[in-house]
Length: 165
Image (cartoon, rainbow, N blue to C red):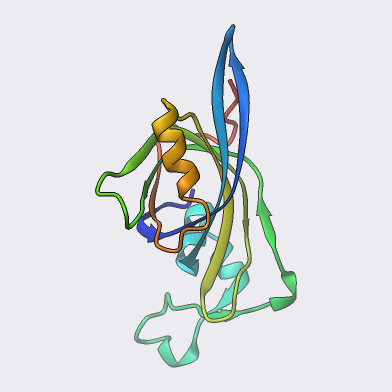
């Protein structure tokens, strides 16, 4: 699955709700995250995906045969990737020295728009469980901030069939 480190991200929407874990009520935040990644990130979703969407640049064939900036079918529009996976997601904004880490988050509702030139804008949902009100407030403060950076690291035991609690 896709991953990135210390990369610009945008928190575009936050849905606040309660989940029940047994008899316990647990605050849950669904975060809609957006980020732009290079088209090589498609290789992490499927080893054949990028080559099915992009053509190589003939000028760079000998220098870098992996350089594939030309979108084959720009009319495709938004594509959706089904399934979900477990990851750790860490946020950092320009106003705080401390990272805001979440381990074992569920990532799903992945969509992306392949763009000519090799950039792929992604949106996806990250489901987090803030440990207290202070953490919740810090997450809410990230909404629409322009200078948020994030790290998404897929957990090794992650599968495409992550179940909700």
